[in-house]
Length: 423
Image (cartoon, rainbow, N blue to C red):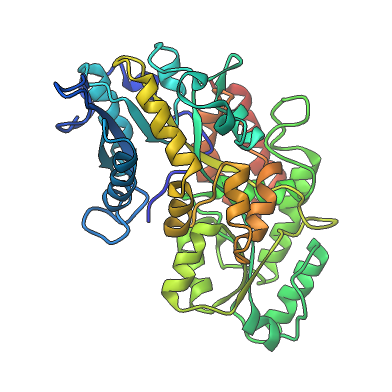
């Protein structure tokens, strides 16, 4: 499964729109969608693939066909044609469609902001009923706004929590998951003494080092920015955090060489029973299931003085283009998606989380998802609304892993300089 869930990070779509050639546009990907002679309107939709690709049981094509068939049964005068594109290509292909005038009615991907500047999107209140928009998680919906007006609709979300191997905990005589950093270190020492090679899985490689780092920063009242909105990567709290993490690494209580390890590798090791504890999300669960690991628990992520009352929140978006004049039909489709069982199905299939209070309530009986669902309404986000984040994020991925190998203050200080000079 390949999902973006970039927390709305700017993907450079506005830049892509001015490129002369950005990959294949694909046939049938957009364009004028006029009503047919019998009054039927066909909506063109482009969506990212959360599955394993075409032809697979959990492919995006299979998911969307089920949704659109059910929708058309209830709304026979509206058809929805969905083109599913993998995450690596979708933004380039959509940029080409727009450039060629083949604008879809609906787009589901990782960002919306590049289209707002060019006046291409409907406002949310034009394509979503008040009862649906009112049910959205408020913190998530706020990030769909540009200059106070909502254009992006949260589509799916995710959050993070601590996974722990119950069999390894029993072997190490650990009775409950850690709530503080002191308890985490004590548990890791017991796991090591019991022969566990990676007591705590610590992925600080380039795949998602910015996420793992942020979770640890939150545990000490830190973050990438301070309360005033200024860059604070080398704050005293963050330096203390990475000094603590470096101590775990130096004591052999983590994944070896964390700066070279990606999350997927560490999650696979957890699934294989080699790791005692690891931070992960609902999207980790299929990896654990595929490895055959069943006896694990999920708990809030430990912080310095107690478990986090927040978590990393990430989300993808759905939006409506205004060229083809189908706001009424799009509204019917969006309302159908969010109020029916389609949003719940996407959570069931891909282990992604809903973005509505109603959706959270529907999934509240799932014990494995409870810690994630509980954390969503109070989630914390990357500073992706700052244009400098687009430059800083790659630098974090490439270098922050060095803060648990070399001098934390120096590594974080260099990233602080990058943040202050970027943009």
